[in-house]
Amino acid sequence: MRSLWKGYRVRVSQLSIANRRAWLRYDRTGVSTRASLRAAEEFRRRFMQHLENRPFETSVTFQHANPRVPQAMGFQPRRLYEDGYLRGTMAGWDITGDLRRVRIPTLITVGQFDHVTPACAREIHRAIPHSRLVIAKGKGHLLFFEDRDRYITLLRTFLSQAG
Figure (cartoon, rainbow, N blue to C red):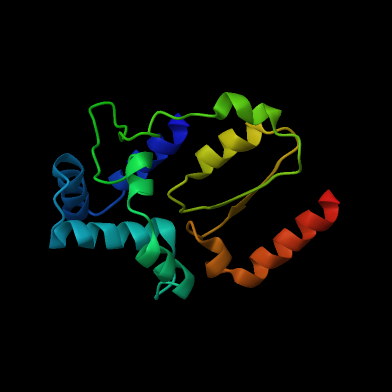
């Protein structure tokens, strides 16, 4: 999904100047520094989750994650090329054309400040017939942690309507 990578570039451009420079330096070199870690922290706080502390579940996930998965996706080490796209085994993978084949009820949720931007979520929504899109105002990527009660209500409603 090209809009996913475009959204990623938009979010990086919204970092503070110092953090944006550090992030892009890391993208070019793959060398982690204190500055790149600060940039990653700003990215996490602004576009992943707006909670003060990282939820236990995400901490455990990152502690036990297989490092080859994000590398295959093009995220580690970061290499942002001239066209603005990351590289990796799956970096060019795009199933946009196949989304129209989805025939089950589909709920698409995205936070207003998600790193998967609302524009990307709208593209997915337009491609999947009869899908439902919910954009959570003021939320990031982990809206099920940021507003758990609302998310559970939304999910229960969707599932009860989907049969």
